[in-house]
Length: 147
Image (cartoon, rainbow, N blue to C red; front, side, top):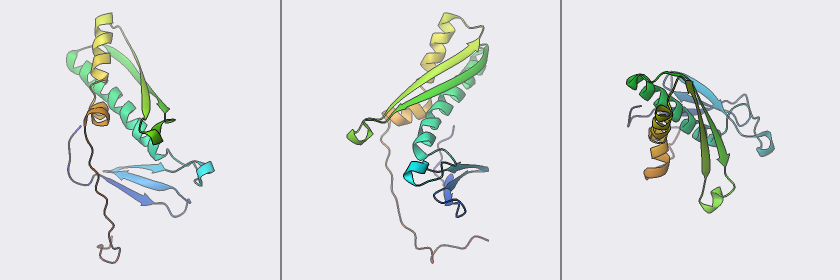
């Protein structure tokens, strides 16, 4: 869970599939698209799904990392994220995270893991950090060619 300043994500259009794009993160790729009703092909998660997924993945990985570090006997972790975007245009986007952890855990360990889940870096990023975004438009003729 590093804090990098170099480019780590590229989103490239898949010209064979309408609105579909392919997200490249280091050596990993995943498709992204929009719903058929919105003009896409629904061939991958949409950007809101990816945003929501980041929270769920971070909670799961943070809890497992912490449990291993502290010797807490976690067998399995599942995180279910439920989105309420009904007030997004009014400035409120709600995500509910349900954490399911199995293992021979005491009530105190379960409370400890829940507390850790609420401290995952993406949760903090979504709720406690001001994100500044700068978007530039590059002249394709000036860009170096990929070979």
